Amino acid sequence: MRWLAGWGRIVWLGAVLLVLALSPSSYGRPRMRAALARHLYLDTAPILLGFTLLCALLTLVITRIVVVTAASYGLSQYALEMVIRVLVLELIPLTAALFVALRCTIPNGAALADMRRSGHFTELQGRGLHPLAVEVLPRMLAGLFSVVTLAALSCAVAIVLAYLAVYGPTPAGLPAYTRVFGRIFNPSVSLIFVLKTLFFSLAVSIIPLASALHDGDAGGSRESAALQGLVRMFAVLLLLEAVSLMGNYI
Image (cartoon, rainbow, N blue to C red; front, side, top):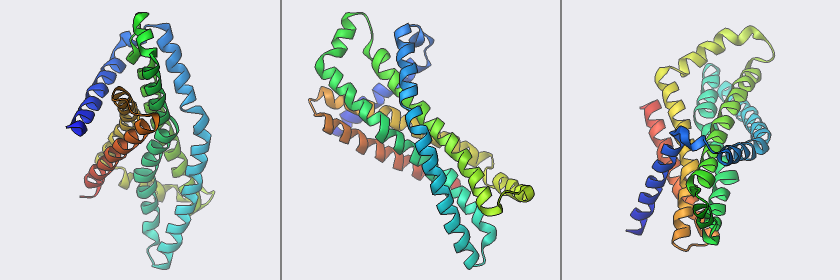
């Protein structure tokens, strides 16, 4: 029953945050706009360069391994398609979501749990401010923005580096590369890719925050709140990844 109640609380709080995010009135207060701008910067800018370089290195290593292995088996024509499918479709969105969760949203959730226990939320309510709109919503939107930004930029870098690793700095391979890319990203795969990235960003943005607030109500420690958020988020990410794989390959 506690397990069901915990997930019910997460779903309810996630729905409330989505309604607040889609409501224009949520952005009317200067304090909310300032908090949103601060968290957008703090949750994206410090990790953008490092994550992009990590994905670039991963792209070069995986591309080299796949190309050499495919050539040894006489399957060179499938190497580039495999690289794009593994990196762009599967690894980069999942890695971006996990990176943002570990770097930003799980620590943010633990900080919110501390704020609630220390009475900061009660103080905000006494001043006529809604804690969800002032403290929770900016962190949720910043996490969502960070995942989408990191995934989009890293996918673009991976696409360029994969081409350079296979064809080198020459435009001669562009026709063949665009045909491979167009064959992979048909309308259904493109839709699944966009939806998967969006749901990944929602999962890592909402679940750690909601879990931390729920565990804070239950009197859990900061470490317990972070661990509960990580376990629940990881389970949802695995489920989303399994659904996307079924949609792409079944």
